[in-house]
Amino acid sequence: MNDNHDELGRFSSSPGMGSAMKDEAGVAVSKDVNHVELLHSTPAVNVGSIQNEGFRLSTNSMYGQGVYFADRAAYSNKENVLLKAELSPHKQLFIDDDTDASRIYRAITGVDQFHPRFREKIIEAGYKSARINMGEYDGNQVTTVVFDPSVIVKNKIGVK
Image (tube, rainbow, N blue to C red; front, side):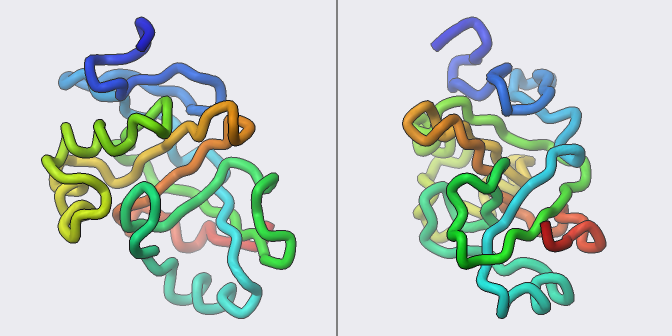
C-alpha cells in the first residue's frame, strides 16, 4: 500500500481512476463520476431493449451483481456493439488493485461479492458503484460496476 490508500486500500489517485476525494469516513468519492465516458459491449440484438428499458444486472460476476462498463474498447468483443453511458453523481467506491476487491467488499459489507445479499449490502453501505483498476496485466483497464442502475442516466445511453 502507498500513502494514497487508507487501511482498506480504498483511496486512489492512479491514472484513469478519475478525480477523487476522501469523505469524512476516509473513503474515496468521485467528484466527476458523471463525466467519465463508460462503455458497455453487447450483441446488437440487445441495443433497443437497453435503450428503452435500461441495463439488466449481471449475475455471478467477478466483482458482484451489477452492470459492467469499461473505460475503453480495447477488450470488447469485436462482434458486439459498444454503448456509451454516463452516471449521475453518487458515492462511488474506488479500488486501486482488483486483487483487493474481495477483501475491501468484505470489510464494508461483511460478505464477499458472491453472497446473495452482497448488492443490497453494498448499496446500504452507501455505494452505488465501484471503479476497479484491473492492473498492468490487463493494460490498466478500469472496470466500473454499477450496483444501483438508477444512477445510469437513461437518456445518455447511445451507440458509440
